[in-house]
Length: 83
Image (tube, rainbow, N blue to C red):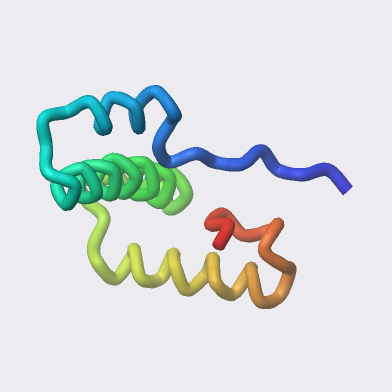
């Protein structure tokens, strides 16, 4: 069984850049979360065939439900999110 490459939502270089930024720790956390969210939204948009700007909250919820269903039925290796 071949393993999927692990998707990184924040590269080590990006994480280091955030660490160097003149931000409070809570601002650094929010910055990391925002960069990661952008990557995930980009994936969801590609997966659903919708531009990121046109994604609706319901489409995001539906995508998460589908990814969760894949994890339950096929295991965490088959799901996109690995948590």
